[in-house]
Amino acid sequence: MNAPAVGLTGGASPLDTRLQRELDSFRAADLYRVRRIVEGTHGVALTVDGRACISFCSNDYLGLASDPRVAAAAQRTLGSSGTGSGAAALVSGYNREHAQLEEELADYTGRARALLFTSGWAANLGTLRALFGKADALLCDELNHASLIDGARLAGARYIRVPHADTGGFTAALADAQAQGGEVGIVSDSVFSMDGDEADVPVLAALARQHGATLVIDDAHGLGVTDGGAMALADVYIATLGKSLGAAGAFVAGSEALIEFLIQRARTWVFSTAPPPAIAAAARAALRIIRSEPEHPLRLQANITRFRRGIEALGSGLPFRLSPSTTPIQPLIVGPAGPAVALSRALLARGYWVAAIRPPTVPAGTSRLRVTLSAAHTDAQIDGLVAALADASADAA
Ligand SMILES: *Cc1c(COP(=O)(O)O)cnc(C)c1O
Image (cartoon, rainbow, N blue to C red; front, side, top):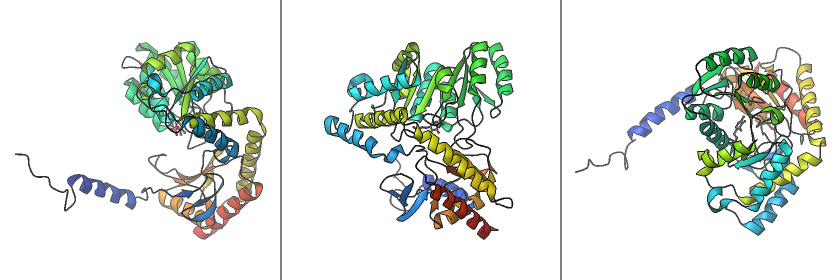
């Protein structure tokens, strides 16, 4: 006879006991995470946990997630094509909207083909696993996004961790990797998601070419915002549609052979339901706006400059340090997790929402307020955040 089930009706199960112990330790270390509920659109002025505030933590850098033209395109396609695609693209889930979006993304990136994935996470896992295997080596910047790290590990290739943005480190690692044989991939974010600094893509591309390696660049935070050269130079160009395009999903762009190979072999693509056609329609509308209205990235750049000047003008003695970033990701490094969370709370009480980012998302001792700017922020909103930071810092001192 089977043993009777224990713990289902009364008392904590061994699983729950173990998890509760870990949860308690997260809380004790100021590393416990909770969600906040947004009502309505996820724009710059929003309602969070029932309270109106100005958000400085979204990756919707151009304000397209709440652009009525993008929503209208999705609505039209919801009307004509319904909600779900019903199957993977290879079965019956491939809609005319998906095909057109792929063509437009290929055209925009200047590559032969593009392939639509359900998320950037899925694109990175599926692509790295399809292109590399046990005999190969992947040279990865140590601050790469979690999905690139997991993708490289899933591929089963030798994982070579390269110091952050260290082109000399890549050069040395390339020589070592080649000596051992197999394919070599260079894998990097273009804009690093938690620091806002940029990889030197032209140098990485030159290294890849010299050594016959493959350059894989994740341009999640660059697409539509900054052109660091990834579109033209990466052998495998990956970007998401959920950030500056205000939609959802992701794509890989590259050669005819690359895309045809991924269609045969990228498991997160082959075995996953295609995105809703309406989401593809939203991304197409956003892409049209990006291509025809260059004023948004210009406005964003002006906002970045205004924010940096504002923080610099506050002078010294602040409980945070401004990072040397020129992108919309402008982290304020606090250090320990507790004070970073306290500062984030103090800002929210003043009507400004900036998330505190803590380990394991960032290295221990570098907890930060990850300020992100949008083209949709007004001068007054940016000045307001700077004033609130000064005010909250004075309280914390
Ligand atoms: C957000 C992000 C991803 C994941 O993309 P999703 O579409 O959100 O799954 C991948 N890479 C980087 C660098 C990111 O910032």
